[in-house]
Image (cartoon, rainbow, N blue to C red; front, top):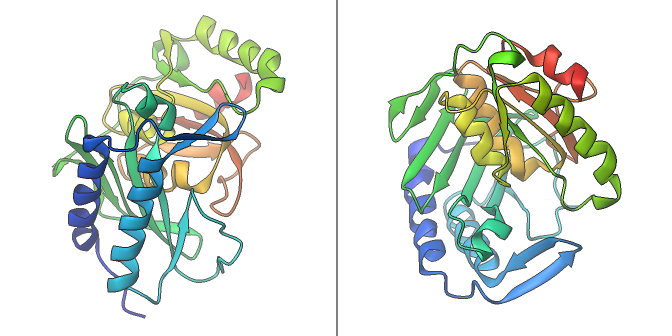
Length: 256
């Protein structure tokens, strides 16, 4: 099977970013579940990218957040798309919303892009080929321990029945780190760790489209993403992740 390369898909993602910037349909909001929203723009971006990918590479399967993915054969190559990671941010025009797209083969991303149209920042990664921000190489920070780290925390807004335990986790991390932050956009958080703007992160209830591209970008920048429960997070179902610059992963995981 002929597989595309990263440069093949960047123009598609950039064009889709214009749909987000226009915000036509941003007020057409549906609730998929409690505190889990989707807008007409999410569907429009997904359909545009899906059509482009299928036109050029019809042999590659497509997994998207806003579709039924039960037909995916995970033993074969597949795209993983989040048309807008950070939909709640998008609804409020918070401008921390990204398109996240990766190509997965043999259960591992081979390249990915996380694009924030509002800032023009385009994070990319190629397996074995490095991580980049708008074409310039990026690298994780040198924070040596959690006590030196700025850490993104996840509030798990779709799992509010677990709020008490999750906020106890956040408190433990807050007391042990420089400080905490919350973007509400997992893919972007992973990229911020990749370029050294933050040092760690944790989130429960992540899906493949939340992490596939950002995981690869962070890994290529020298960091790592692991499951809270040990090992690598799955790219075929839900996960809980801990991400760092690689220097204090087990220290953070032990608090979570």
